[in-house]
Image (cartoon, rainbow, N blue to C red; front, side, top):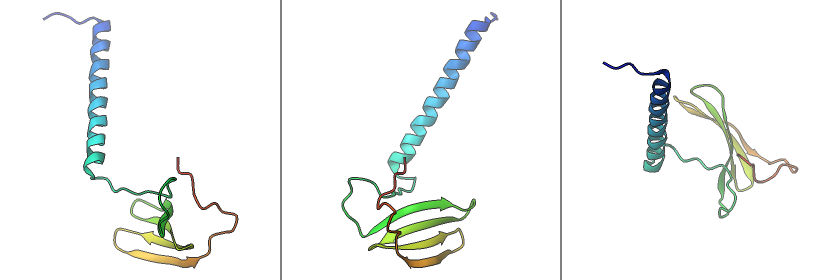
Length: 105
């Protein structure tokens, strides 16, 4: 059996790492393309005016998240959880100085 030099061992390791990363990227693209991931859009520019928009999503812990939604210029704060959903506050008037669109980049 022939011995591998340090340079060829490093090169082989880097090629294997690149192959694994390429597989992960291809898998993530396939999962997204096939629709296994929930599609959530948060006030995207260029969309037609809709009555219902998600303004903000804030994770509380591993199982719960707060969602602020806007419906007909009124906002509603909802806590979504694994066991149940809870309406925290409803009919909130948006602050006059707050922008209608939030940049989520």
